[in-house]
Image (cartoon, rainbow, N blue to C red; front, side, top):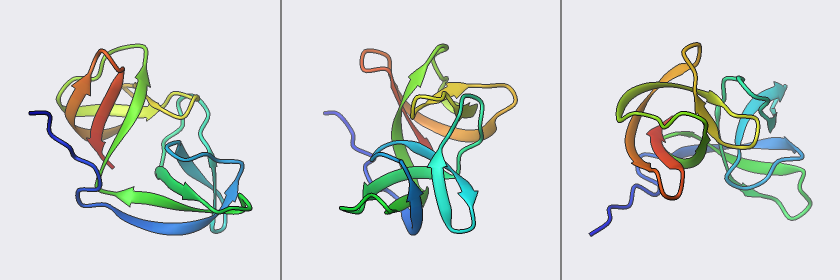
Length: 114
């Protein structure tokens, strides 16, 4: 049986959006506004949904999320991660430490605590 971590412990807030898409990791770019991360950026959360007009979004700021990863495979346990510039994460010695609970090397996804 495959475990699901979807939504565990998640809490979210609504932000003004600057060209973001659902499932993308974002950073605070201005007062009350989020934008996509560049490669190596620290991220504040993951976009859960985007308003019909695209000018607002709900961002998960805590809890478990699943994102794509690029380059090195993250390790289980505490791992330092930063944005990969394509909406996902990368292992980065200069990144923030996150608890990684699942790595799917076939799908190239990682589940971690924000």
